[in-house]
Length: 195
Image: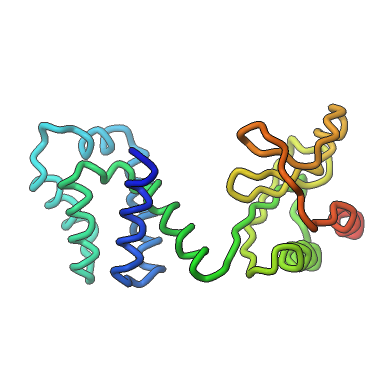
């Protein structure tokens, strides 16, 4: 599906002013259900009657908000329900932009303590001058250090990168070098050393 179409559906979803938490919960649930190949094939199959698809949606979701259900019907009518995960991500991104929020994923070898998490959040807020939401995860493949992800930016200060002599502190997933900005990698290292 073309990115502009995804963004268009997400923008309409935001303009309809539904409860954001409900939208995220329902769309996230639907995207997980569509991970099942049989269910995905059912909703993607052009021969299966759209009314039948709508009926199954209505029965399974039992939504209080009929307008949100009708939005999902539009996706069924336009054969776009299978793109619900992409629409949800675009919706979250538009909401974040509207709310002046940036989302990051911080990956470390071990779980960070609350003090370290708060320090990383403060550094990012100071650097970007925005509200920051962080999802902290662990990856036992990292020898040490941390990796910070935002959209297609990666700030890599892990020992895997350092040990492979790739002295690049940040890369764009498209292969271009990006500006780390005001983030002080040394501050992040200090946080980890104190953890």
